[in-house]
Image 1 (cartoon, rainbow, N blue to C red):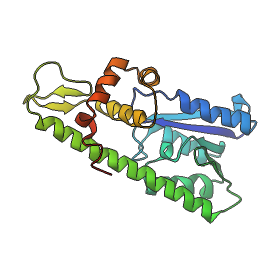
Image 2 (cartoon, rainbow, N blue to C red; image 1 turned 90 degrees about the horizontal axis):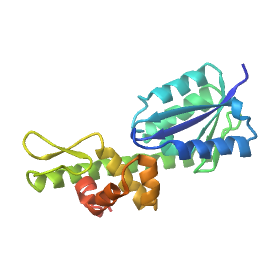
Image 3 (cartoon, one colour; image 1 turned 135 degrees about the vertical axis):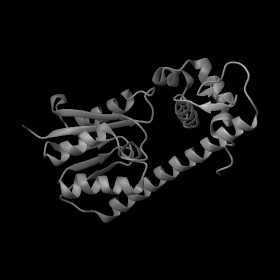
Length: 225
């Protein structure tokens, strides 16, 4: 069996759409590298990137170590991992131990197993450091937002998106809370509400409500500056 080009795509929650990452990495493989679509395999996860306990990631690593993969393509460093340690370990397993190339599109970096470039490795480590820092800031802001919601007192009526009303009457985060945090992050990066509604399957009116009440989800946006 001929070696395969692997695309690795990850989003943080089940509501998010992998389509943009798949399109970007697939077009890079076919248009830039001349890979036939039949020789491309997609590995994906809808889980946090703060650890590597992910089914798609494990399947990718197993394929890499079995010799089935010639190259791995990811759209961003943070898609592989938001942990510096895990990202460094992943690069070592893919490139150094198994001789597989790694392409990270947002950085414009291609790691060739036959060419060790310490400057490129250092640059990737810095990018992974910022990805980890961003994840930590998000966690801190989320904790602040939850605390702020609780400080508002007991909730009466229908709870807002991302929350349930706990047995004591206070708002408590549910499975949609991380989706709300992701929506705010994407809005900050310039995404439109229409686009986010399509990608997350959340109504535009709900997205607007989340945006209007961002302190409820992520605390004071200036607190971490």
